[in-house]
Structure formats: structure tokens, C-alpha cells
Length: 217
Ligand code: DC
Image 1 (cartoon, rainbow, N blue to C red):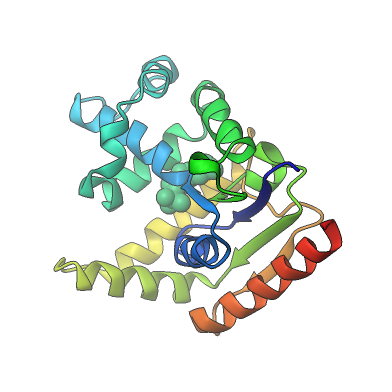
Image 2 (cartoon, protein in one colour; image 1 turned 135 degrees about the vertical axis):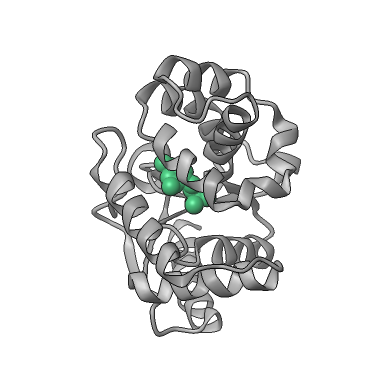
């Protein structure tokens, strides 16, 4: 039987990564944070001095992606995330990263029986046939607060107002672009995490997956 795919989409800082990791662990599935691919492209460009890259320059970086960058702590910086959102609007960059994501979903590493992928277009473009699609949302305020606390625990001195503005800008860019915009698939389960603890979100998602696995068996 083909790998069981869980597609998780949603805006920046909605809690996709934490949920995806927990679900992958629970079900023994492989996990791919697809945002890290766009972030690695952005980091490569920043390091080579291309802070306002052309589509061609960004596509070259995506085609020749240095996989070591996926483990760099600089991947999580706001500057990297913001440029990631810019290059992610470029069709040639998306095309260059498409194949890797589809292959991961179809053949999860280490023979895992399934894969959890999180991003913006997993349920709509990368894995439109995924048996489970989740779309996580949360208010800008809730997401900015979470990002603020996350950066604080890393020893940074974040500015809540600036984080809110950047989240808004990122939402507009990710949802407003022509290619693979952020939007829920028609058959996605919507989960608003603004007022839910991670345990509650996890329990809801787990129940959805268990039901879908029984249906498929
Ligand atoms: O999820 P994240 O914040 O790490 O993603 C960084 C950027 O990458 C995000 O602003 C939009 C882009 N992205 C995308 O366009 N498609 C994906 N599947 C994942 C991320």
C-alpha cells in the first residue's frame, strides 16, 4: 500500500511544526518541514550577498541546494524567513523544490509507513491526494506572541510590534501570490489554534488521522 500522507498547511507561526513533529512521532511517520527548503534557499542567497535576488539567481540556488544548510541555526532567523517568503513566490524556485517533496511523500525515508509534510501548498499542490489534510490557523496576535516567546527562549530580544508586522506582511505575500498561494484545500480540516493548547490540537489531529487510517484499511 502507498505511504500514508498527512498534509499540514497554514500561515507562519500557526504551530504546524510542533504538531507535525508530534504526529510523526506518534505514528512512526517521516517528517518534512518544507518551509526549511525555502529557508535554505534564502540562507544560501543571503550568505552569497544576494539579498534581493532575481528569479534566476534564486532558482539556481534552489536547484543546487546545499543540504547542510538545512541544519543551520540561521535557518530560523526572521531575516531568513522573510526572504524565504519572497523567493517562495517565484515559480522557478517552487518548481525546483517540487520533486524532492513529492518523492519524500511517495517514498518516506527509512521505509516509514507514512509521511507528515508541513508547508503552505502541501494539500493543494504537492500532495493533493493526501488522505488527511489539516489547515492550521490562528490570529495574528496569537502567532506573534508565540514567535515572540520562541525567540526569547533562544536568548534574542524580540520586538512584538515588529514581529506582528512581519507576520502580516508574510501572510499577504504567501496568500496573495499567483503560484501555489496559501489556502486550505477544499477537503482540509480547519483547526484554529488561537485558543487551543498544543495538547488539544494534537488530540484533534490524532483522532482525524486514526479515523482516516481505519477507513483506508
Ligand atoms: O513555514 P516557514 O515559516 O518555515 O516558511 C518560510 C516561507 O517559505 C514562508 O513564508 C512561505 C514559504 N513556504 C512556501 O511557500 N511553501 C511551503 N510549502 C513552505 C514554505
